Length: 192
Ligand SMILES: CNc1ncnc2c1ncn2[C@@H]1O[C@H](COP(=O)(O)OP(=O)(O)OP(=O)(O)O)[C@@H](O)[C@H]1O
Image (tube, rainbow, N blue to C red; front, top):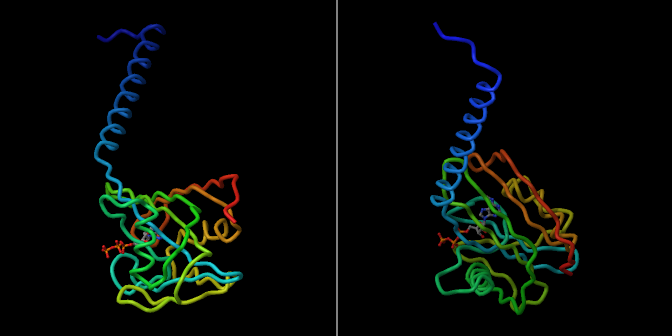
């Protein structure tokens, strides 16, 4: 017959259980981080007083949604060079300078790839936007941004950008429409 455990023995057992739980947690998180892959992307918004340039994505990831211009940073390219290249390729605009406005990490349930999106804006650019195979550009008043036809995260961080505030944010998606978890923090510096 099993005898009752003493208080000391119970404590020891609990301690061992906690240790094991902690070990499992650490192992699974280091496992995850060794599995996790990052894809570095850019997102650029052309600004003018009171209005912002958006593009309707005509194909690929985010098709059918209004967004800024951007895409994957290529090997050997700096993030800002990648941002400028995508802006030019997607709507014919050349940014003379870019302001860093935000950094967003996106996670999709079931996908080990984390998207690290570097968000920029520019007030200093050349050429009028033109439609390309990838994007149909359109100016929107800052108060008429069509959040209903954009990525659902946009409505949370756009106000920070429109107010000239830098931010860092995280969104965990289930599918393309549902945000399960998120945080956002504003940086103290002003961008404009
Ligand atoms: C999940 N919530 C999101 N909210 C807002 N914006 C998001 C986003 N997720 C991705 N984005 C942006 O969408 C573009 C995709 O670019 P994407 O077409 O994949 O890149 P690129 O043009 O290099 O691809 P191809 O090489 O043509 O396949 C890129 O600007 C990226 O920053």
